[in-house]
Amino acid sequence: MTHADEKQRTALLRAILAFCVVAAVLVAALFATIGALNKGIYSAGGFVGQYLDALARADTEGALALDGVQPTEAQLDAAGLPSDLPTTLLRASVLGDLTDISLASDVETESGSHTVVYDFKLDGRTSSMQFSVEPTGKFGGVFDSWRFATSPIAALAVSVQHESTFTVNGLTLDTRAHAVADAPASFNNAATYLAFAPSVYTFQHDSALLTAPPVALAVTQPGVTEVSVEAVPNEAFTQQVQDELNKFLDTECVAQTVLQPTGCRFGMDINNRVLNAPTWTIAEYPVVALTPGEVDFEMPDTAGQAHINVKVQSLFDGSIVTRDEDVPFTMGLSVTIQPSGALAIQLH
Image (cartoon, rainbow, N blue to C red; front, side):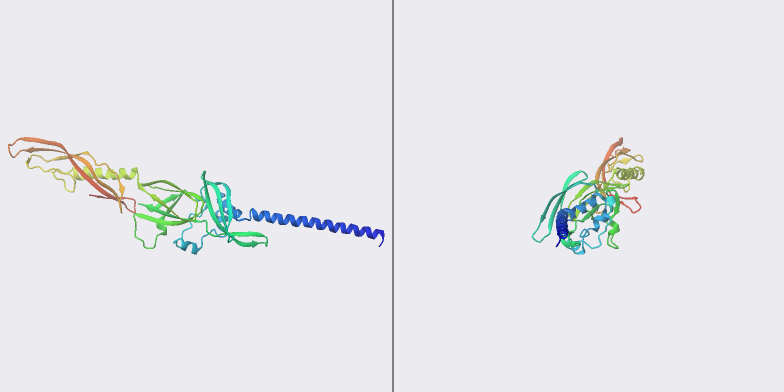
């Protein structure tokens, strides 16, 4: 071998050695990168973080696309829920404000599943939620893949007292849309809806006659969460009933020039001779205050004052006096709201 050949061989060996060193460094860097990614974005905590990030961005389609987010029929059945629950609330416009998301813990169990806890703020209030995640193998042969062992989707069981409609985060829904076919009309109604967790949902009712104050509910766990919306008569409702009651007393009762007005809750017994037609007025109307009953709104027997003016002659001595006095009485009523929105008032 000539000196030139030896020199060429040495240069080749050096090049091969350099290539091997660079390849080893690149392979090590690749494995380090894969390891870092599997501990970060492709970890159990990173998987849950993707779900929370999607909710924070109101990307409901992205959130629902993650493995295990949508509850299975078996999970719904285990919770005592039907498989056809409405998905009306699984929309971006209904989501509350989710911010300051941070991983609190990621603990692996003996089975290889992970319990992941995240802290965050819901509409500015600090909260947290626990998630159960399980491995599903690897994709690309190197990256860990995961699914929710328990769906993070919640079921909101909404009970609407004395009404059928309610508003949640600005969306108005009617529970009757999900009632059993041919179900009779009810004074109280209920329906269950699938909803994202975590999120804050504010329930209320505001209509021409009924009002329910806002109820804010922070949902931070899967499964069934119950909420009650109690719609009660508002000022317009109460005033309308008051006006109808006053009108009845004025036109149907005091218009009768007799001692015992027919169908009215007041009257006077006089054992002496009545010299003229009695005149009635209402000195004090019963004040309407409505409370929910079993099938309608009720006003219990409430005090009022009628006033009579009549001349009376004594059968004993013939003296004449004018009975000009208040006559106390009580009156109650019940009210139902008809499908047309009109009130049906029953006096008793």
